[in-house]
Length: 346
Image (cartoon, rainbow, N blue to C red; front, side, top):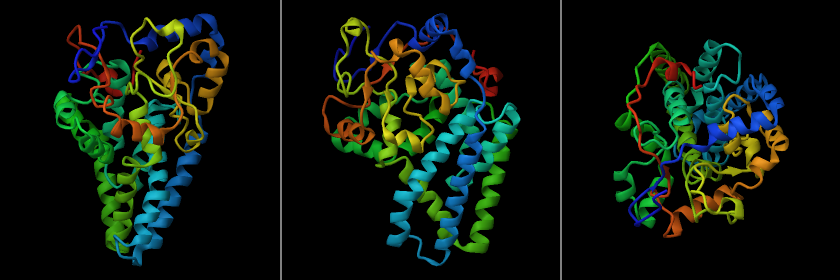
């Protein structure tokens, strides 16, 4: 580990990402954890209910002005929470954790995409799987901020802009960092979403669609649930929430941080992020069980206590910035193959 030698440098390491190693160690110590893998059918019922809720609210507002206070407040409180739930349902489906069939997972992801307002599901899948397979590698992990972002946004105002418009950065950055092949799922996602948007505007006016878009914006903005985007992999306060135990003080800062608070109920336990990266094919309902089975592996790891505090600390503590990410140099030329796009990680 080279360390953060200056204020304008990432946390570079030569060590392999820890999740693959820890997965092997956990399976060796607790082979029963492999039985936790597999789809969780309840995901579809939960996200289906959230989609219906968003559709109902959007149609209720069809006679309201698009930027009226009732629309804005509802879009932040209910819509932001609901669309963050949908984002994370698509995340579960990208790991084939809704159905046994990859086709069914992709179709479901495209269908529940509707309240997001923009086509998202098809593009998210391959980029997210690359994030898992190449965690911290600057050429392929598009979750990492670029050097240009880190330089330009290295101020309180810049960090506030980043936290406010996170989804915009996550939408544009992948296209600038790593290209992926465009397949028929992308075209289906695009055609379905645009058709749905057109029909909504034609029969119910612009306000329902604007409500969807506002909900998506707030879901990735200064919203308590949006704190997970920063909390998952940013090394804040080296680290935030609690001090490293003695057993970890001579190791590099962890790549990944978990959160075990009550907000997990809204987002499919995405706060169990170390557990998720260790076992991407264990669904959200069984991640707490994984932690209970292997506490000796997870209890020593630093975690965050509050996603809201994560956003606050990220913006207002000078030592926290977009530079606070562990990065690895890509040691070999890795092609974005059909295996990654199809979801075969291991």
